[in-house]
Amino acid sequence: MNAGILSTGHDYPEGILTNADLEKIVETSDEWITTRTGIKQRRKAADNEYTSQFAVRASERAIEKSGLSVEDIEIIVCATTTPDQILPSTGCLIQKEIGAVNAAGMDVFAACSGFLYGITMVESMIRTGQVKHALVVGAEVLTKYVDYSDRSTCVIFGDGAGAAVLGPVEDGKGILATKIMSDGRYEEQLFAPGGGTKMGITHQAIDEKAHCFKMRGNELFKVAVRSMAGISKEMLSKAGYTVDDVKMVIPHQANQRITDAVASRLKVPDEKVYSNIAEHGNTSSASIPIALDECLESGKIVEGDLVLMTAFGGGVTWGGTLVRF
Ligand code: UT7
Image 1 (spheres, rainbow, N blue to C red):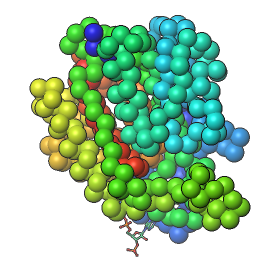
Image 2 (image 1 turned 120 degrees about the horizontal axis):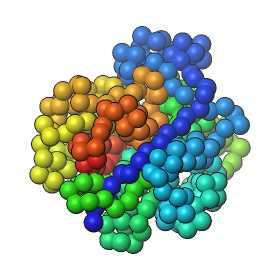
Image 3 (image 1 turned 180 degrees about the vertical axis):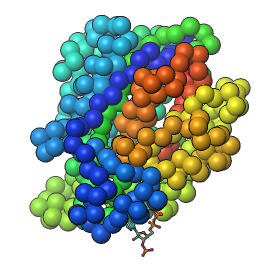
Image 4 (image 1 turned 135 degrees about the horizontal axis):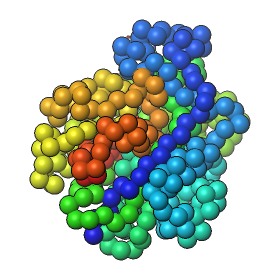
């Protein structure tokens, strides 16, 4: 029995941070951000909002659309790099709020590839019969880890959450190929050194903004294009398809220029590559499930369509998943 994506949901903060707003905070311009990233605005959580709130609303929407009862969910995997708190996991906090009393809750920590990490983990659990129904969530409040004096990172990131309910589907449908990878040697391309046991939680570390994201964007850009294009080709060939068979490619929404470069390497036309980066910015692990839910809600993806998802992120991590809906 294959595992398939039965339904999706998403949610994001009401607060919007536009490029014009950023022009007032840091030395940048709407023109620079638009041409270098494709981003026009991003969602920003209020001070009293936190990751699991968006995750819970996205999850409830996905579960409602699946027609299942919340008690049917046997595992909750929350992909996040910006949890509510260090303990317990955001997966457990989501479990409490939605009332998934028959589930095990946990987090995966794989930055922007986290949603595909979660999908890959639960795919084998469903296929082997260990669980029947799973909830995979990608949820982030990145704006609380952004240094708003660092113009190379603060213009990119936004907040939000997306969720998917997975379960058994008939043969020929569902997840046809999925793979996750990482290469820790690229650790310093995107990292936040503070907040953990290495540096310690000290006043000095906080004053130095050690908990905020640091990025070597230019180097990461090249790894992103190479890894996403490579794993996408591998997933297609593993499942015996070509890019012509794909209805929609959903790449992690990192930078419009990265998306365009991946599309060009895959030789896939623009209209088959989904982009919402102008409205959402880069929401890390939430970007693919938000995009997927938008595609399903708008009818861009319908039953029978072949969809290729690919992501990369800090670690570095990357992944690819090919699904027949
Ligand atoms: O989800 C994974 C997370 N990370 C990513 O996906 C990041 C991947 N990388 C990128 O998206 C791009 O590398 C960035 C958008 C981060 C940067 O774009 P870039 O075209 O690679 O610019 P750059 O880093 O090569 O910088 C070019 C110039 C520099 O000025 P100088 O040294 O040439 O005078 C930067 O200081 O652009 C400057 N710059 C900015 N200027 C205005 C960097 N950020 C900004 C900014 N506004 N926000």
